[in-house]
Amino acid sequence: MSYIKKIHATIDGKEVEVDPGTTILKAAESVGIKIPTLCYLKFMTPEASCRMCMVEIVGMPKLVTACSFPIADGNEILTKSERVIKARRGVLDLMLSNHPNHCFDCAGNGDCEFQSLCYEYGVKKTSYEGEMVKKPIDDSNPYFTYDPNLCILCHRCVNTCEHLVGRSAIGLSKRGFNSKVSAAPFQDQWINNMECEFCGNCIQACPVGALRPKNRSQYRPWEVKRVESTCYNCKKECKRVLLLKDNKILDVVADPDSANKGRLCNKGRFEFYDVQRPGQIAVLEAKDIERAREALKAQLDVE
Ligand code: SF4
Ligand code: SF4
Ligand code: FES
Image (cartoon, rainbow, N blue to C red):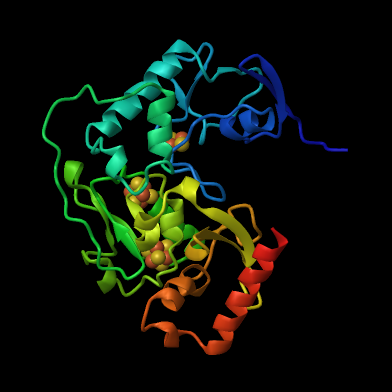
């Protein structure tokens, strides 16, 4: 029997019973209500900067961010009221004012949380006028590309690197419309970043096409076959998902629900880039390549 006094509240008319300190977002999840988020990341302290998750607490003058605001006893919460929808549209409109509206040309097309939310909330173009700042793309990293023009400055990559990977290799630099993610502390090019171990966990955290693996231009998410597999490179045996097109591995992503909290190391994520890039096969030992092929074949046979 628990001696903790539970919190009782309603969300969109549904009764919830949760422990004190539970955020509105988590309380809503517990009764199957999904609140949209952009900067929020599971396993981490909420950043609470994008304001996409705003909800209304009846009787409170201001909307609150569901990802960071704890639910209180007797709260009556509305996640889809007119005020809430208007506020979320305003957030998307503002983000779109400094984001190229060229989804067809973008490597993130079809796999972009920002695009999906704009579609869901009917935001097709920005209502703000003015020139957009054109920032140079950083293509210096051998495994991934950073396009600051697509970056919505959500901080998910920075928080992942700092709190999940433990490196603090990147940070936000410059101000206003010139803001972008840079190698920490002040080096501009990713390749010069001595802290970065090229694990690519920041790419997986990115909700748009700003940080993307190099191979991402070769496929669209709906074209690939996803094969679950276990990495054999060390004893941790992390879960990973191979993305295949025409029986070639084009990318590897971590399983976000696995025990490794959706993390992979450089070898776990990018070894297939090296294996398949002509002239770089020697990077891996032959027996590893054999095992990689065997594991893949076994997975495909099971399917
Ligand atoms: S690749 Fe890994 S270490 Fe480098 S910036 Fe991204 S998360 Fe940090
Ligand atoms: S690169 Fe992606 S994850 Fe990082 S701040 Fe920009 S949009 Fe967010
Ligand atoms: S998801 Fe809550 S403020 Fe960004």
